[in-house]
Amino acid sequence: MEKPPVDPQNPWLELRRLTPARIALGRTGTSLPTSAQLDFQFAHAQARDAVHLPFDHAGLSAQLSERGRDSLLLHSAATDRNSYLQRPDLGRKLSDTSAQSLRDYAQANPGGVDLAIVVADGLSALAVHRHTLPFLTRLEEQMSADGWSLAPVVLVEQGRVAIGDEIGQLLGAKMVVMLIGERPGLSSPDSLGLYFTYNPKVGLTDAYRNCISNVRLEGLSYGMAAHRLLYLMREACRRQLSGVNLKDEAQVQTLESDAGADMKANFLLDPPTT
Image (cartoon, rainbow, N blue to C red):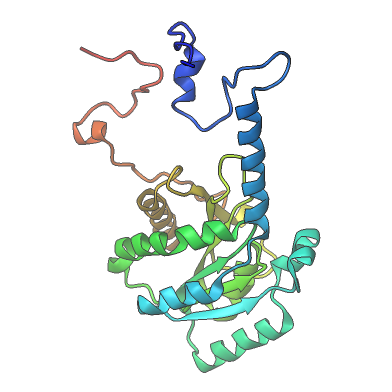
């Protein structure tokens, strides 16, 4: 049976081709079509699976080692996934054993570092598995000229964003960047978030952090995320702050800027010139 022709007068159908958002789903009687309902249930299952997927820290550590990067494995105070999900506060601090291990490492390697990179499973280990290595590759390419000293990549099981501040403080790091799996959406179960803090220490609130979200193939590209993060890091070193007082004003290279076009123009509002 042939499908009915697309109605050229329905602008929603054209918009649907441009976004994964659930628009123009149609209807069957007073309900959704079967295909749309099954797609929703599948997306919901993907999101649930992403939340409960175990963190493959051993695999990630091996991949980092192949690229010449050392890593440290730590654990938050949340003993398992259930306690992590029910007690967010436990995911924001290291377990006593991990904290002592990090103190021992810092004592054996005194002097501190410029940058500590922390990777935590968060609410989507899938995002960490897929995007950590490609993103770090682009970041290290772009920051090679800065000459910053680096700590081993710290891998954290059952970690939340604030745990990066404790790790940065114990390592004596000037800056900490947290890579963490974001809460899955119904169209993005593998979104990676980046959180940057200058002069990290225990007790800082979100106001002292800068966030770059939705790092994935269908969202913000690795190169663009690295470009924005490096702008924040360089400005933080110059101004000695981060968070709400540090705005992302990184210049984005575009076809229009290459051609010398007026960057104030808005392609959504201004008609094309002929």
